[in-house]
Length: 323
Image (cartoon, rainbow, N blue to C red):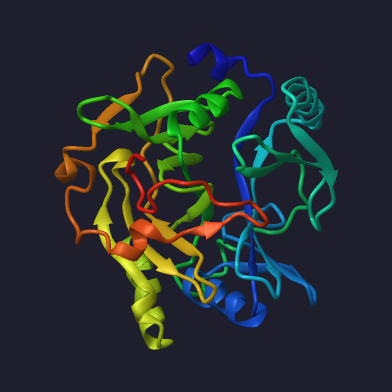
């Protein structure tokens, strides 16, 4: 894995953005501004583009208006250089994957990959720049989310799908396995120096389970929850606070007005040394996977966002379970 991570076929650097749909742009946009604290970079009648207060790139979240059930158009990854987009095009075409060049406001050349796993993602090397909002101390909003950290996708076969992303240059920081078979039912993949850019969880899919933004401290985490309460949507604080064993992250999960799941987390620990091996967690040790915090509600385990126009596979709806 280390050799591929250090010498990938094209150089992904991090999770870049998420594109989801909503039937009510105004209400959804208000949720992400007032509760998460994101900033609008651009909006028109069809979409709103938002970013965290630490981010200088044009957007990390796209809300697209649609009269269809809410879905995820794509997750996005950043690549190091424009030439990596051409290398990615060659790589995927050699594998027989379907790719196309698309345009999106604020982004440079963008390669959309209709991957055989049915996980829809796009690659971008450049975005328009916007000023950071870190020094706007007089008007903080919501949890003042700093930056997009990772996405989690539910797929029926974590092992084979994970191997495809490892071949692209992702590195497995941690894995959750069944106690007896050692089958991978959760996989934490990264390109930047923390445990996760892309997390895969086993279940019927592909579906977007959640996307996560980093907040600075516990005060911001609780501030987001308090504001959700004062806005009358406190019941959409779906899970948390709690701590994950994998990644050692402190979390709270929210559901937005369209049902998409947002996670706010404290700054993750770092993964920097190539000799560090993948940490294996047994699914049988539930007290270690979530050492404290209330158990996940059933809707957290079963509900997730479908990818746009992608059929759902067979398999258990609940995450972390085998077929």
